[in-house]
Length: 122
Length: 110
Image: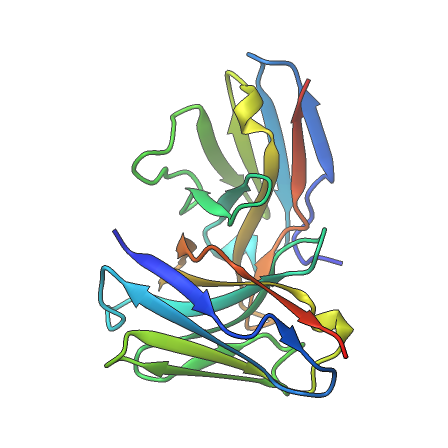
């Protein structure tokens, strides 16, 4: 059974960079049609797609976050990472990593990590 | 303001049936498959329905999905108190070049 686990600081200061890593276990990170994704959920609010990365390094970012987001993948460690710079209080959220199955018209997040709360505060 | 529109809340009695709508446009639902997610309190979302109407292994057949044009619907029959959760629809938007979700619907089983 595929498992995903987020890790990283739970507290980030305003204007600094939020950095998270997702470790994938129980399966390969290099499969066709699978994209490794970050999704966030501010407290009491809905889900927001941040971006997705293919094992080859191809990335897709949310237009609203594109200028501040960088994602990377390390296939040897079966990990992928998120960096979000110049954070503000509005970036406070639970951050989830997930595996996206994306082929032709099909688009679904099959596996999710448990989520990690990141608070932006001085 | 979410790209996909869902009712904020729905409610029904145990044993009854409920439907949750998800409205979009030709750039998202109209040209892509829809998926649905259940988020129980304090937990990560879980995939309920993919490709409009398919259930992953282990998901009860009390859950069903459908799509017509630019709208999709999640149906839940034989409601149980354990179904109380937030439900989200999601898909890809080809115009925005972005994954999109509905704002979520809170289901209350009275």
